[in-house]
Image 1 (cartoon, rainbow, N blue to C red):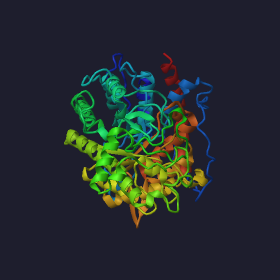
Image 2: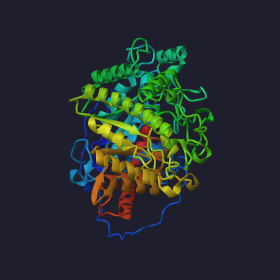
Image 3: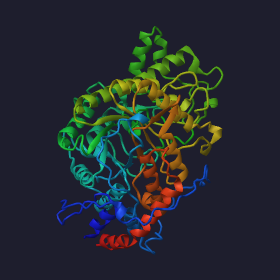
Image 4: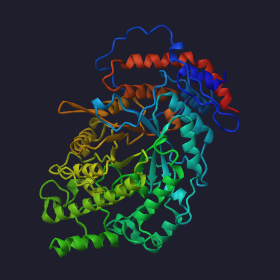
Length: 570
C-alpha cells in the first residue's frame, strides 16, 4: 500500500490517492476497528471541569509526535494523524431546526482569504491539498471559500476568470468535501482578520473614482470603498448596469460554469451583502484606525444616493424637514452611547419621532437590499440543489444599553424595546434562506463589561428570532479561537433549548484554515471538537474519552505520519 492508502485504511475514511497527473486512482476504506486496541476503560467524567485560561493562539511549534520535525511539515503531517471512525454514509446538507431532524451539527472550515492568487491560480497548492485531506480525515463536512468579485471579474465587465476556483472546487470534490461558496462582492482588507488586500474590480473602482458617491459616506465626508453603496442598487451606475444586475450576472456565470458541481460538491451559496460579506453598513471600519472596539460606529447614509432616498421618505411621511441629513448628534466612531445626545439613555434622540423615522428608514434600506439580493440568488440557483444563506454580524458591544448604538449604526434597528432581528429572519424565511450568525464562540464575561458586551444574550435573541420566523440558523466564530473554552461555548450554542424544544443549528463554519489550526495541540482539540459537534452536545461520551481516543490514534499512526512528512518534503 502507498502511504496515502495506509492512512486511509487506518482512519477508515476514503483518502484519495493522486497519480502523477493529479487524477484520482483509487480509494482505500477499511474499518477503523482494525487498528483500535482493546476498548478504552470507562472514564469518569467531571461534571464541570476546569476552564482553560483564555490566551491568544500560539505560533506553530514542533510536534511532540514528530520528534523535532520542522514546524511547517509537522503541521501538515500532524493533520493526518486524526481520530476518525469508519466513514459515515453520505448525507444531505442538513436543513436544520429541531432535534427530530437529525443529531449533531456538521462543521465546515473557512479557507484562507487568499486561496486564489491575483493571477487567478491556486495559492500554496500543496498546502491546500494536505489541508483538505487532513480536514476530511478529521470528519469535517466541508470548506467555505470566498469567490472574490475583485478577482474573477477584475479587468472588464462580464469577463470572468474562474481559474483558481475551478481547481479548488475540483480539489474539494476529489477529497469528498462539501463547499459553501461565498459570493464575495466586497473588498478584502480593512476588517478584523483580513490578512490580504483584494479590491473591488478595477472597472468598478474607476466608476467610483468618477462618482465618489457610489461609495458609502459618513457625515464627515469620509468614503468607504469596501462595498458599493446600496443607495444606488437599482441605478445603472456601473457602465450601464445596476449593482444588483452586476451581482446577479456574476452569480449566473458562477452557476453556468460550475453547474456540474452544484447540489453535490457545492451545497450552499452565501450571498455577500456588504462589508465582510455581511448584511450591514460599514459602520465600524478598522482601516486607518477610524474605528476601534468598542466604539459605537457611525451612520453611513451621506452619499447623494442615500440622501436622495432619505429626502423622498421624509416627504412621503409629511416631514420634509427630516430629509436633509442624518442625525448630527450621534457622536463619532469611538464615542460611547452616553457621550452622545442621540444614543444616550435618558431622552436620547433615538426615542424621538425623528429618531424613530430615521432608524426605520435606515434599517429598511438595508432590508430592501437584502431582499433584492437574496431574491436574485434564489431565482438563479433555483432547482440546483443548493441552499442560499446570508451572514449577519454579531455586534455584541453596548448590547446591555437601552439604545444598542453599534447595532443601530450598522443598520440593525434593535433596541431594548424593539427586536431588530425578527424582520431580518422574516425576510430570509420568505426566500427559504439560512440565517448565518457570528460571535457564537464568545462568552459575556470574556468581554469588557464596562462596554456592556453580551454576546451570549445576543446569540439567544437571534435564536429566538429564527425560531419565530421558522428560518434555519447557522453559526460562525467571529475571531480565531483554538481553546477548549471556545469549543465548549460553540457546542452549547449549537443547540439551544427554547421553551423545552432543542433547536439545532443547521451547520457551523470554523474560522479558519491556517498554520495555527494545524499546530499539534490546537489540532488535537479541534478534532475532538468536530467529533462532539457531529455527535451532538448530549452525546454520552465525555471530553476525556474523546481526547484519549484521539491521543491513542495519534500514537498508532506515528510511523505513517513520519513517512508522510518525508513524502511532503519532496
